[in-house]
Every structure is written in C-alpha cells, then in structure tokens.
Image (tube, rainbow, N blue to C red; front, side, top):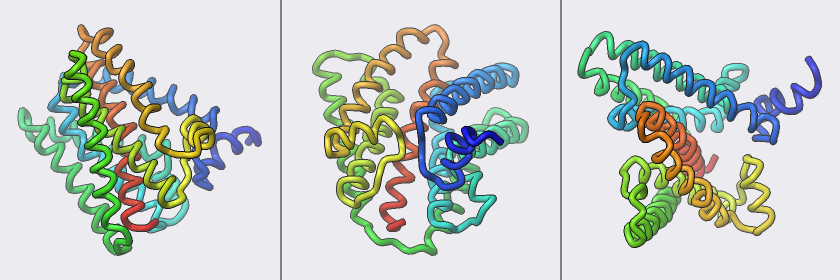
Length: 268
C-alpha cells in the first residue's frame, strides 16, 4: 500500500494521532454521502425524519461517546479497538442505530421510537458499567463543563431573543448550540486546565495562535449561527433533509463533548 495512504489515513487511526487536512476532507465527504444514503433508505422504509426521531436518536450519540472512551481506557485490544476510533466508530454506531430502528419499526409498529431509544440507552448503560471499573478522578469536572456550556447557551438565547433572531428560538437549533457549547467547554477545560491537546486541524491552529482554548467559543458560533440560519431558510421545504442535517450537526458537537467530559472525569 502506498506510504501516502498510511501517512494520512491508516497511521492516524492505528496510533490515534488525530486529524490532518487530507483525512478531514475525506471523512467530511463520506459523511455527506452517508446522509444522502440514509435519506433514500428512510424514504423507502417510510420512516419520518422529524424532531421526535432526532431526539430518539440521542441515546445512540451517548452510546458512541461512551464507547469511544472504552477505547481510550484500553479496555479493548487491537484490532477490535480500531473500530472504536474515528471514523469507524461513526459507521459502527450508524449501523447499530439503523438496525435497531428497522427492527423496532417491524416489531413495535407505531411505537417503534420508544423501543429504538431504549436500545440506545441500554447500550450506553453497558458502556458506562465497563468504564465504572476505572474509577473516577475528577467529579467536579462535568459540573464545570455543563455550567460553562449552559451559561454560554443561555447568553446566546438571550441575544437571539433581544435581536429577534427567530431561528435561535427553535428548540432543535438551541440543542445543537448547547451541544457545541459543551464541546467548546470540554475542550477549554481539557486543554487549558489539564494540558490535553486538540486533535482537529483548524481548532489546534487557532489554539496555538491565541494561546487558549477559549477561542473555541467564538469559532463555534461563527460557524454554527450562519449555518443554522442557512439550513432553516434553504431547507424549509424539505424537513427530512433539514432534520437529518441537524442531527449530523448535533452529533458532531455532542459526541466529542461527552467523550471529553467522561475522559476528564475518569482521568484518562
């Protein structure tokens, strides 16, 4: 296999060294392609991509985040552990979630979303039981992270209300912003307080440039606020595509936020 493939794709997974410009663009393109496939599949199965579906899928984000920490804690060994590293863990969680959804739709009919979310919660519980054996090191950390994330989100909501930005009053948009404020808070606490480092290319560049991970807050807002406004305007006539796109944004914020928080709490 060409050394270029090892450098940009295989080594970052095997050695868990993070992202580079090449694999970042590649994973983003694959994500976009997967979203299109999911939309086609859901339309064929006549499954609604509405807000209740998005909220019912959140337990799988929790499951994926906690499962990622299972790998961080070295509870599983290679080669199985490679399935728990980005991007493979996203594929793994997506496959399990889709299989659970299809099964519950077949078995539970109209009440399929309740069963679907319960499977995700059960999976999360199993992961947390595995991690409980590692003990805790910093129980105050999640309190700080959630306090910072909540305060930042409240400030955004107040500003949105003050300037009559209607899209900031949408509960799904607020949930996405909250997820990313939690991610910014977990990065700030991890980098500035505990000496961790950021693995994504652009955030690490800006952290190095400014000398603090506080830069994650304005970075998130500069990207998310116009993107959410654009999604609501451009996709208002296609709620399925709009909600699935928002689910992807929610996952990209909440998954790393929870993973970082659990890691810092366990001292991993």
